[in-house]
Amino acid sequence: MNQNETTTLSSENWTIRPLASADRASVLRLNAENRPALAALDAIDLDRLLEYDGHHLVTVDSMGEVVGFLLSFPRDSRYDDSEINELRQRVSESFHYICQVAIASTHRGRRIGRALYDALAVVARTRGDRLLCCDVNLAPPNPASLAFHEHLGFERIGTGTASNGFLIAFLAKRL
Image 1 (cartoon, rainbow, N blue to C red):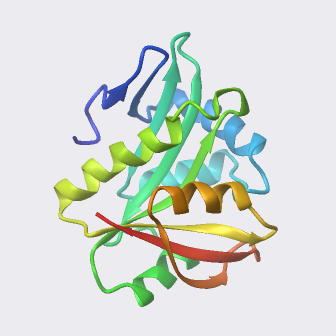
Image 2: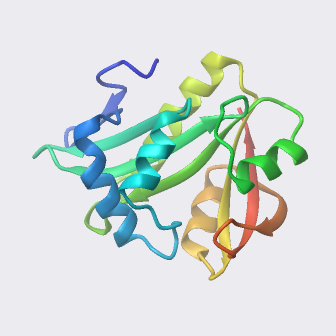
């Protein structure tokens, strides 16, 4: 799968595809709905993130509404925030960093999050990446995200402080 593919994975109720320019407002809405679990993004922040080499996916429901998104960057991307830099110091292997993931509250429990991670894993494996990495808030706590990641096989590889000042756990999953 590459960034230009139209459809990566679908069910009868939703489709995963690369994030398009027209999806930006929906991504910002979902980001706002999912704070403080996610670091705040405004239009300028999102545009900056999308300038970096990355793989960004959205989930679109049967009505065409964006109901989920995933922003990610390979280890060797130009993306340069404190979290990925910390992972670059901790992890010597090639990895793909999951920067943000959000699912609309009305669509949780439908395996969309798992499907987004599965679609990204295909990209990462194709690139030769050995790990998927992410961070999850410990303070303020995000127990649902920790449980989700543990269920998918992610393991804690350390703790740190995110750029927004939150205490976070760094997680990794071998591909």
